[in-house]
Length: 231
Image (cartoon, rainbow, N blue to C red; front, side):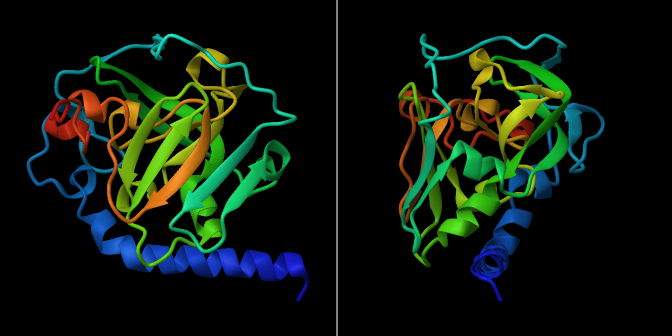
């Protein structure tokens, strides 16, 4: 077996181990298991009402950020995965694009009450990158840091879902700078503030840590079908 084959086998084994560890927790999350979800419309991809409560559907894509849009040089950019991991990572843009790529349709729900439906995202599953770093047994949460200083957090059972992507392409085009390009986190089963734009650091934690909006009164759990906007 080549070194590359050995590395790939290790990642697959780590991903399976993570899935086994968190599978029951993932299945029990509100976006999959809520027996009284709020909202309207036919069932979505996960059996919830297509449009969460308080949301309206739009084809526009409003721009929301902290007031600055960092210019990122892909020749020097790197994604770091650190913290409660056995193998800390530093992935260049070339290395990230060499990982298994997926294209999936998902819906985008902003806490400011608009939803954009059926967006086609291409990128790397977050679970793939986390598995490469081999989270320790203590790891239970993920903390994201963006190039503009923005932060947000997820429990691992949300981060490991198959539709959570590190997205670089949307609807067939490179992700625009104003929407988080070159790379952002996509969290279709949660409000979109949980998906950091301009992502550059992922930290695995044993204990939860609140991000930018969570510290300012936004919900720490952010489940759209429970109208779970504020703490």
